[in-house]
Length: 371
Image 1 (cartoon, rainbow, N blue to C red):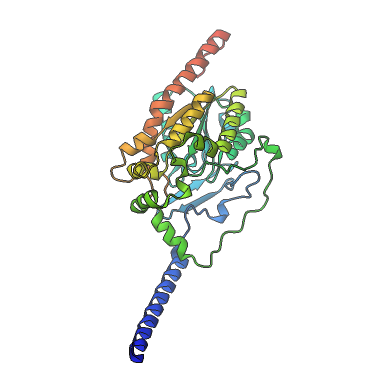
Image 2 (cartoon, rainbow, N blue to C red):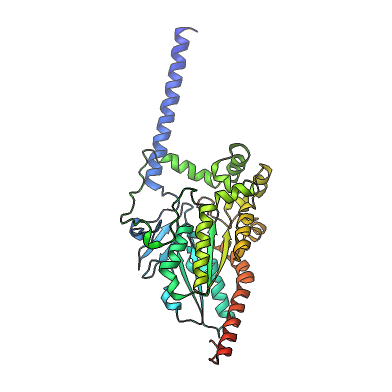
């Protein structure tokens, strides 16, 4: 190769490198000016987590923007939760508690569009003569340990008759070596919010977020990459029980605490967007997209817990792929509407039975019927 040829190639490579560098700098500048990370909560809206993974600031209103562009409004009560205080339902004849993480919180939607909220609105409309109380104790980033601590510290005194626990496969599997501390009074206390991450290169996170909701990328990962995030779908029940063991420890402790208070636990299992949108790709890659439902089903059968699964209904009505926010990956208002139909079919009759049990107990004791 002649010197002139080498010089020409070097110039072209230098031009290409400069072009790529400029493109990167433009992208990085754009991301720094416009991008908010997934599941980003304004710092002003959160408080010190204490014994929890996260807590919302009490008596606070904020507008939270999703990565997909939508914005939803959040107002918290004096305890930092959406909706009425748990104490307001304590004197009701029938008391219902919605407990869980961001799916129960209603991340991405107005509170009235969250599926349990929709169910209770319909129930009150259909049974105006029944004074049924309902409250939320839910926060994004919570896991089964938080569920137990939240019930004990925030709701146990109200003695809820029915606790509807929302479980999400995506982040409710706790690390195998996580501490197992049942008593919230012995849990470590965190008095300071962690510093927000400040990555040197933000465009990498932006690219990852853009690809995270791609069904094509998810299918390719299932078939070729076999990432750790897909472990909940491995078709090995013994391995799954080990994977879920710490989470099941806390869910079992929660069930015990609820039963001691005279209440009943029902679990609503929220499936991931991956299960609903790419079930065939998961199964073709050797996974079982229904594995979380099977594993939770075995736990619930063992402990006498009611399990409500949403996977079939969401899959059947996902033709337009509009039940989840593609990048944020939480349920949209339409997704919650589909879930509410399932809850009405499954939990509505439970409320009827509980009310009838209360009425019979009052009659046997010679007290006025609950109203």
